[in-house]
Length: 301
Image (tube, rainbow, N blue to C red; front, side, top):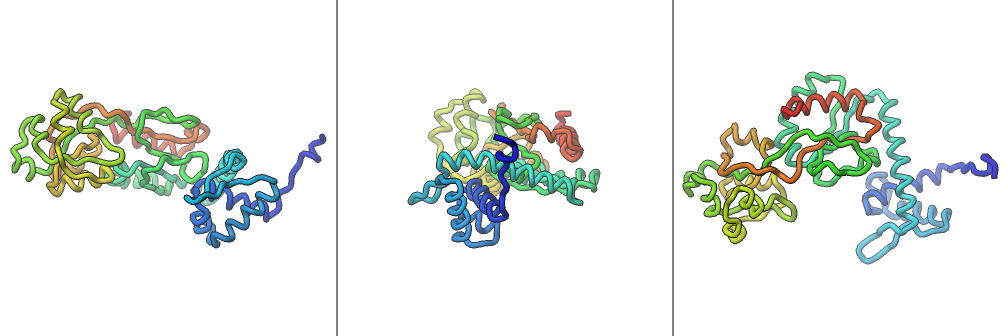
């Protein structure tokens, strides 16, 4: 077969259908894809149905809980994700805003450490337009929606460049008023206080107590309040609702302001903060500038 016979020309209709498919595959929702494209969900469904007729294969399995990718859809999504990601990055490089840097960060790091310090970075780099998204979801680097991610974990993610930015310790903190009222002097006294827990994911009180050399059973039995994130846990602690486990040095600003005090030792966290980007883009000037600043601010340089 000659190259001319291999060549496939995509029509405008094909491209629109592929765009609708890529968004629906990435978001898992025809409605979300429709909102991103500013069209109706039925129009998205119509485009994808046309694409399925062209390919001769079902791309989504439709069930009572919504839609999910079929095997053929999963294979196509791997290709369209890379293709639209490459197009997005190419347009960004060619536009007048080529120094725009889109950053995704875990919420507690974004709100309590990154954003309070960004003023100096922006002052030092007026040529960089920074867009920060605080999201608990792991950013899909290949989709092209972000350039850099600041993730919490152990750095073992496939197909990305990951550099450790900050080591973390898990430390119990409380409002000064609660410390005085309950006379929390020694670390073991924390077991007498209401404990703030983060669900579904969060630092474990029994893990902290074990690492601190305390009786973990006392912490496992202790009642308290449950919240849905470390940011909410810190707010609850600041209002005197109990003792929360937080990441040090992320909570430095609360400690300096006196809103919270440490009431026990810090123990090594299972994860750290990592700077993650696509391997081929780690030498881009804007990403290199952010990397240097993060390392200097965190003391890891």
